[in-house]
Image (cartoon, rainbow, N blue to C red; front, side, top):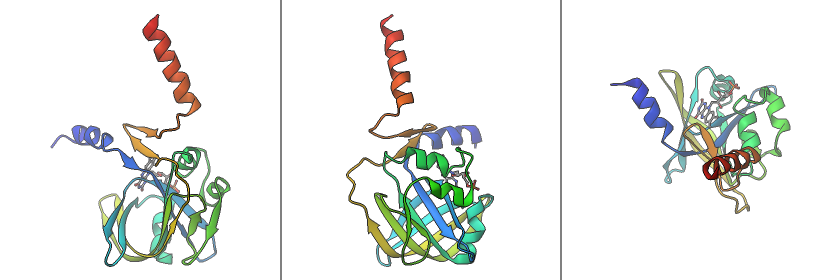
Length: 179
Ligand SMILES: Cc1cc2nc3c(=O)[nH]c(=O)nc-3n(C[C@H](O)[C@H](O)[C@H](O)COP(=O)(O)O)c2cc1C
């Protein structure tokens, strides 16, 4: 098995982008950007999420036994960058980006997410570098936005709303093509 080929293949697996959140016993909020989320069963309503064991959120999810999955739209790229640690923000400071509220479980819920799923942790199983979480969905919040989902593939965010940087690059490319 060629690991590099595996990684290249996985880069082509375009996925929806989410922010997984939790809260610790002192009320400190944690969150990270994650594509490793999928539906498990509707009866009972349950989902799976995978977080790196080195991520700051992983041990707090195990302690609090609650987490929320917030599904992003293409208006949320800055949020996705911030919760991936790319804006130099950590822990509570990440929550200065976006509008957050708490609901049933106490795990932070993004006010304008496409959807948010509040979960109680049913099972956490380590596998290699990651922790596989099974969440019992106790509340689903449905957003009213009709914005397109935020996707990630081939190392880049994709949405129907191009970033200025994308526009500038496309413009440059089309100028070079016609030169
Ligand atoms: C598009 C995207 C998807 C990601 N998906 C995951 C994921 O599914 N699980 C995970 O543990 N980290 C994922 N990451 C990495 C974390 O968001 C990143 O390492 C984050 O900084 C970890 O939080 P921490 O800095 O608080 O430890 C992803 C990053 C990006 C940009």
